[in-house]
Image 1: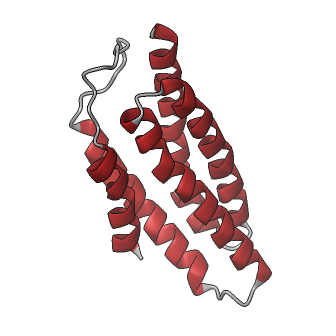
Image 2: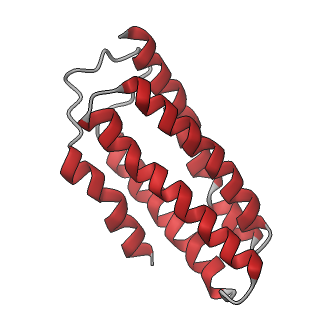
Length: 143
């Protein structure tokens, strides 16, 4: 499950690329090398978290709700790169990432109903996406 989350998480960058030459970078834009390191760590934590929830049994309603919420936020996560980088649309990227942030919060809540450890494993993800919302907005506002 951990490898699957990492592999799927990397796909948008493979197909949409991550060309940043068009971006007017704000002063707090992190070094490029940080992005693959952070995302690999975050996708690994997500994979562990979803595995722990899944192991509780899909016959439980709380597990099914948690997994469905995970699926929604993961789809939003995967769609941000093609929208932001592929289309070069920080405005639409901002819409996607705000929706992503909301679903991560919902995902943490639904995971907590099954496993507090799983919910806690998603907190760094929420932190990074919170930063990414600010970064996305700064790029949008500067363009």
